[in-house]
Amino acid sequence: MRHHVLHFQQGGWDVPVGFDPNSFEVVFAFLDPEVARTTQAFAELKALLPNAQVIGCTTGGEIANGQAYVGGGFAALLGFDNVSIQVVEADIAVASDSFGIGEALASRFHGEDLAGVFIVSDGARVNGSALVEGFRNILGPHASINGGLAGDGDRFGETLVGCSGPMSPGKVVAVAFFGAGLRLRTGSFGGWEVFGPMRRITKSDGNTLYQLDNKSALELYKRYLGDEAEKLPGSALFYPLQVSNPANPADTVVRTILGIDEETGAMTFAGDMPEGWTAQLMVGETNGLIEGAGKAGLAAAGGENAGFAMLVSCIGRRLLLGQRATEEVRAVVDALGGIAHAGFYSYGEISPNGFQGTCNLHNQTMTVTVFEAA
Image (cartoon, rainbow, N blue to C red; front, side, top):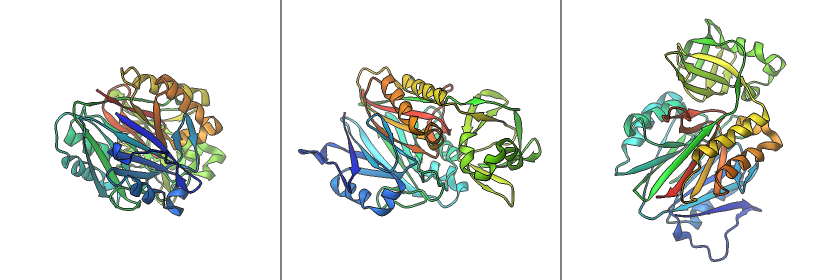
């Protein structure tokens, strides 16, 4: 397996002397929204690697060199032996299309020995859990499905994804890796703690929540946030919800608000908020989040070959950790033995559930995908 990380700085990519663009088959570019909108970084990367599949997205921060960055751009270049790569993409207009788009994209994959899929999706228009469910419905419940939702910093506005054309809003790209020459190891962990009463979701529609215990969910949320309610939806990043299936308590995910509608009382989340499930507020503490990131790294560690690690963490974690965000990156890299890595801070993380193994959308987690030659 071959890998290299390029850094976009001072208006260009830091291409080393003797660089061979034909050594790599697939490239993942993680770009600060301002870099993506005001420079030709993505187009220049595609021109530099004309024979590779180049996928790009905007972020809530970038990860590389054992550090968390804001305002830059990095590209993870990957090359393989005895591995075939298939890339598919689609446009998405509204969140309700997410499941069907997931099914449609997964149906376009054909091959044997599927090692895994890495998805890069628009983060503003998609219902991430429905998207992953669509992929699972075609690929099977045990397929390794990983990736993340593009970000727009802490603004929660328009997110961009690119592949065959320029970066644009409303796009989903999925890369499938086939062949016995590759295996994927994964880890996912949060480190947040629940507090307050457990409530039941009594009215919702997909990823839109209206009522908890037959009361306005938005008003209950504001009551807990106090003065912080004036800063919604941004302040909600520090108080996500743990959502659990009462019929199977191990079936638990964390959800973060992406937007609110004061007129209807609607709260939009990155993934489904199923009626009948329970919801409980969570709070984070910096040491707990850093320790959780290390646990994600440990879960993905243990291979004979070093490989390359893709790290996708949540924008909420970066904002809460502040200048200590690099410490969570270091915790992962140290747990993995210092292997090469890159990644980004997202609006939602796609990874196997750390307790069940089934792939799903997560919020407020650090997720790790290690690509390793078999």
